[in-house]
Image 1 (spheres, helix red, strand yellow):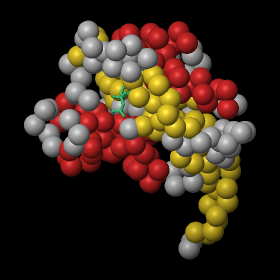
Image 2 (cartoon, rainbow, N blue to C red):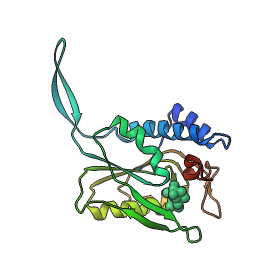
Image 3 (cartoon, helix red, strand yellow):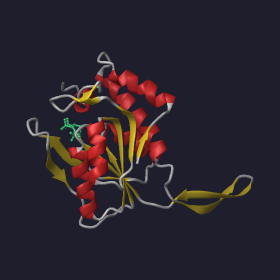
Image 4 (cartoon, rainbow, N blue to C red):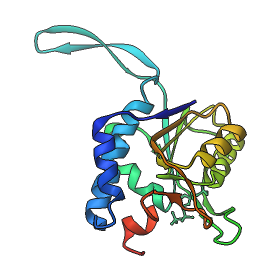
Length: 206
Ligand code: PRP
């Protein structure tokens, strides 16, 4: 399943991110904000349990989250999506996965993974702003499934149709939450029109 956000705030902020004149500081603010909005949509089916609390005026029957959530940013670019989401779900665990794309083959190369032997969370949100060929997302979901993760969702900003197809084919059980599906990949594996390199634009390394 692919969920492309239709929220006006997401579209507005994403357009500012695409603008090549948007500087890293503003870009980091925007990625944080868009991630929060996408997270709101992606977490709409989280399980809750009844919880009774005392208000100053009486007793209220409410609900609280009953699942342990894991945030899985793919380094580097996924890092900027963590803070805002974590603020909304401070009980979440953050497990970093380090992957970079080999510039020639476009295949993901793994360089960091400190997951413990057995899973500690029930729902994993894989965070990466860009779904280009889909290789990095597929490799991350492979790692999480091998770890024993049961429910995995992908949350990203921009996707190429090629990446959506590849991730959906490899892992049809993983819902894809995205701010916008773009036109295509160019011959060096960049999303067009895209926003450039999301890692470089956040960290000022472009
Ligand atoms: C970019 C991006 C994704 C990946 C997407 O990372 O942030 O992780 O490429 O491409 P794919 O769908 O074809 O795998 P990059 O390799 O540039 O590393 P960085 O985030 O450290 O800059």
